[in-house]
Every structure is written in C-alpha cells, then in structure tokens.
Image (cartoon, rainbow, N blue to C red; front, top):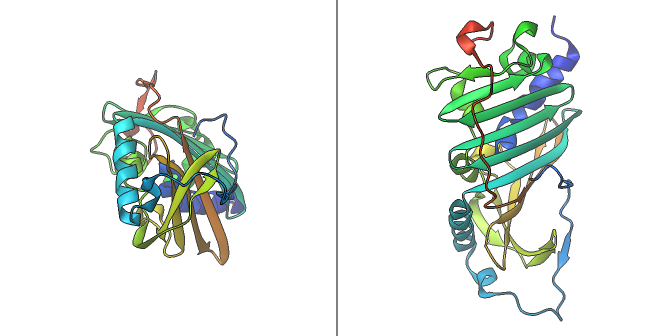
Length: 259
C-alpha cells in the first residue's frame, strides 16, 4: 500500500517536472508574488524596447538570453500541500537541477550528453514508482537510449530551458514596472505548453534596459481545485560555470530502477 505522503510527493513531482526544468542563484530570495510597481509619471520615458510588439519583445529576449550562454533559475511554492523548491544552473552543454518537494530531494546533472540522477529514497519512490533504498543517494547514469532520459533531461540545458519560457496564444504587453530593482516589461499570454498547465495565464517579465533578458516568469492556473501560482526567477545571465561527470556513477541497468 502506498503511503499518503508518497502519493502527495508523486503528485507534486508530476506537476513540477516541467516547471522545475525552467528553472536563480541560491542566495536569491524567491517570492510567490510580483514585487514591483508601475514606473512613476515623473520617471524618464522607458526606452523604445518597451514599445515593441509583444512578439518582438519575446523574440528579442530569447535571442539575448541565448547569446548569454548560461543562467540560473529558481522557484519556490507549495504543490499539493508539499513545500517545493527548485534551483537550476543552465548552460549550453551542461546543467544541474536540485529539486525538493516535501521530504523528497532529487539532483539531476546533464553533462557530455549523459543524464545523472541522485535521488533520495522518497524521490525514487515518487519518480520511478518503486522502492529501491540501496540505489538512493547514489549517482545513477542514464544514457540517451534509456526510456527515462528524455523526462530527466528536459529543461536543464540552456536551449531546452529557453524553449519553455515564451507565453503562447495572443500576447499582450503591460506597462513597464520596476521588478527586482530592474525596469521590466511584462508580456502576457497562455502558459507555454511545456509548463504542464492546461489553461491559465503566463507573464514573462523582460529587462527593458541593458540586456533584454528574462527576469521573472509568473504562471497561474487551477490545479486540483486550487489556484496555483508559480514564480520562476532568472539571474546570473552569462555566468561562467562548468560541471563535470559525477564521481562513482552507477549504470541504471545495474539498479532496481525501471528502464
């Protein structure tokens, strides 16, 4: 019989897999609400960037973010009554996501075209549907030929992460506001299909001055009868970091995990 806590963690993990993939510096305090204000009338007029069409703003943001080559994203909220947090380092060829939901912790590293997963026992139960305590807290190597590769690889490398940011449908541009000490403009539409939300709204906030990179993403929808709001914060664009293959890895074929 599955423990109620395990069911809750599994449900939360199911909702969060795409969200966690998008995934800011660990020292950054992440809130669940937009903490900004409309630019005062007395302030200088915003640059012409804020006057572009919604689609042009998003296209420009994606191009500049890609040119930066790396970023850190983070999110924190509550899913199905479980505390949730995710921090992801994304670059062109490597990345790592640390995900915590309730008692479960999962670390996924992508490097040299391989996925490496380090789950505690609760995360193994939730993500693989089996109990394998002997495989917990070990680096498990998952090759591209394994059926688990795609779902764990999603959203960690920079290109994959960026593919999950653009709002869908008819886009609207909001007035510039100051958000996280940065002048930004919000572009609102339907949630990106990769976020895993069936409906609701998504707003991508893009820096107006300097590099026009994403600063924050806010997505909202009704999930399991309750409105859930997810906030993903982006920072450290262009930071130089390098990840290596974890030590003492174990092939997934040598574990009790389903392949």
